[in-house]
Structures are given as C-alpha cells and as structure tokens.
Image (cartoon, rainbow over all chains, first blue to last red; front, side, top):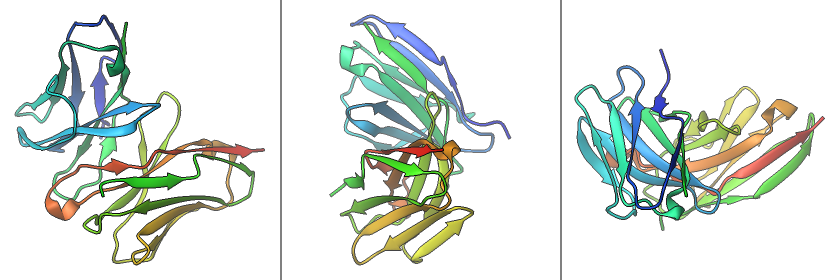
Length: 112
Length: 114
C-alpha cells in the first residue's frame, strides 16, 4: 500500500496570508490526525478527523482549521499566518478506533 | 496531567552498545504507548508500541519495558548501529476513549558512533 502523502512538501508564505495543506491517508484508513512540529514545542496535536467529523481538537487558536472529505482525504487551513506558525506540519492516518498511526513526510511551512 | 516527559534530551552511544531512553506519564487513562523514530527531513515512523497489560515487548533489537505502577516506560536499543542515529519520540494516547490523539515526549537525539 502507498503511504501517507502530503502536499505541498515545502511552502513559503508571508505574514497575514492563509495556507491550505493537503493529506491523503493510506488506502482504507478513515482517521486522519494533524500535528505541528517545531524545535521549541516538539510535536503537538492539532486535530483529528474520522468519517468527515472532527473527533478531537488540540489547544490551537481558531486560525487553525481542518476538514475531511468523503474519500478520507483531509485538508488543514491556517489563516492570518504569523511568524510562529513556521513549522513542519505532519499528517497521520490510522484505520480507525484503536489503530496505529502512520505519518506522512510533512509539509515544511515557512512564514516570512 | 497530559504531559509525557522524556529523557535524556540527547544520547551518544558506541556501536554495539545499548541505548536507553526513558519516558514518564501522569495520566493513568493512557492505554497505548508507541515509540517513533524520525530521521531528518522525514516524518516519524512507528517503531514499536505497547499496552499497559504487558510489562515488556520485544521486536528485533528494540524492546519496550513498561512499569505501570511507576507510570514509566522505556525503549532499549540493543547492539546499537550508526544507522540507528535519529530522533526518538515516545508517545501516549487514550485509545479506549475512541481517540487517536497522541501526546508526545520532547524527543531524544541519538548518535551512534562507529
């Protein structure tokens, strides 16, 4: 099976802009979770989607949002970008309740 | 109570030696404890995982030891190789709560010297 894919892999944006990141889970996986990775804060949970419904949400401002489509693909959006949003954004998929999570390669977002 | 504390922050081991990374948690509701390995420029890769009903799990050179009463778990890498040089993350989640949310430790950078 193909692994988790994320697009784009690299992105440079300016403060105040918005960005949309995409994640395609492993075929058959219905759960998608998003994480932010920074040197200072490490890996932090953003949100989790299962069958197009947000099942869990981390402690991030409302500028961070996401959605999941009927084919399990997911997108996350960050509006009004700040310099501190520069990070590696990781998507992980799992088969659902109790399944192991498998990560994609991430999208490296740089905000200037 | 949601934290997972990981130590050491960095570790240098000679080839053939044993690498040991420790994690501690507070939330007794956690029921799934995976370890991830991450190479530069890559996403974390699931290495091995354990549930609290067993005290040890071994897969090849990698072993998780779990101490439920102490709320601690550790990763042991036997016969460490230069190719094991990477960042290792422990994590915990409450899978019985129907969530995949992982709480990660801060990571340990392992360097295995030839």
